[in-house]
Length: 143
Ligand code: SF4
Image (tube, rainbow, N blue to C red; front, side, top):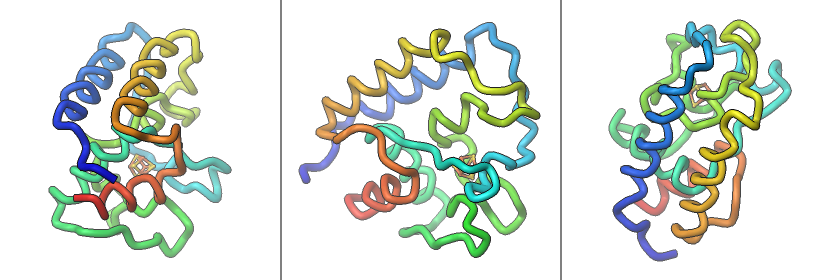
């Protein structure tokens, strides 16, 4: 696969910044309930831009590859129980399917941002949303 075009970072950061500006009260307290995939019953799905941006966070933390979490939790969950790429975490981790944080954003409130992620995915040659571990591992392998 060809190297990603350089503008993905700016568009991803713009999308995440726009999400932060939305007047939808949510408060992530980093309880990490949503990071325990087996318990939560779901795994975040990432578009290619999100995966590349998350992979940059992994690289910045000094790692070159993901290691499975022994409890079946997100491989990006640290031993201290915190997300190791919090600033680079994917869109799904920001839209709070966690009840403690205020519950999931209604799709209609973020549909335009999802469309931007999908458009970026297409521009980057992605194939739609993929489960976090596979998407980030592949992005890391390309770097
Ligand atoms: S990327 Fe971070 S916030 Fe998202 S599920 Fe993994 S550990 Fe949790």
